[in-house]
Length: 126
Length: 128
Image 1 (cartoon, each protein chain N blue to C red):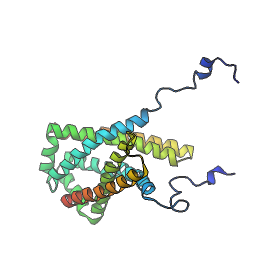
Image 2 (cartoon, rainbow over the protein chains, first blue to last red):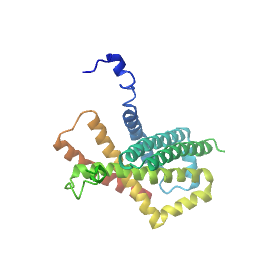
Image 3 (spheres, rainbow over the protein chains, first blue to last red):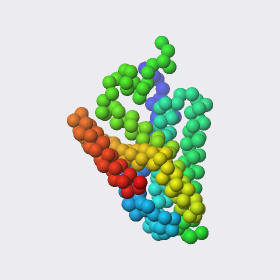
Image 4 (cartoon, rainbow over the protein chains, first blue to last red):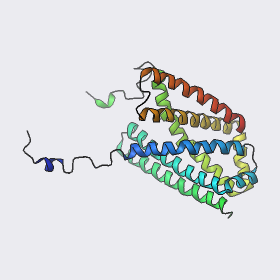
């Protein structure tokens, strides 16, 4: 039996109150993506066989531009969280693991920035 | 005992465990997620960039998807998207504490496969 004061024993070892953050963020982004993928399917119907001018006009509409930006951000965020878990589960070589985690995060944030810039460029007619 | 030599999931399926609908759909959810992350998302960004880039860059993307290899990649992405969407909804239902019994796991699994086949066929039909 430990004679340590319970508070002293708990301090620094207990829940950091962030244990479910990753789990919850994965689900929250999944729910959001159900709606955004529904929009993507609608976009596929609207843009099937479209030429450049039609595609540009479609993505240039504010509601579609907003949906597309949200889709890019939510999709890459969800992908980042998912790939993180896959790496944690299957890659057990520390150096490779750190490099892969970095590449996934860097790739996701870069993709988000790139997608937002391109979609704003279309929406603002630049 | 060398712990690094022990078989780990999902590589248990096949040599150690008989493949079942439940376990195969489970690992397929991951596999399709990885494919969508590594291939699907970059393709979508490439298409968006091509729209922003002008008629010429847009035409090169259209040409890629018209090529048999591009069509194959597109088909794989659309099938993965459909599957991950429907199986993801199945997972969210489980997360709510519902349909966790064995019978529901199989019923839901078959429903996901049917819905995936239908949506994939529809999307491929309109896009190719």
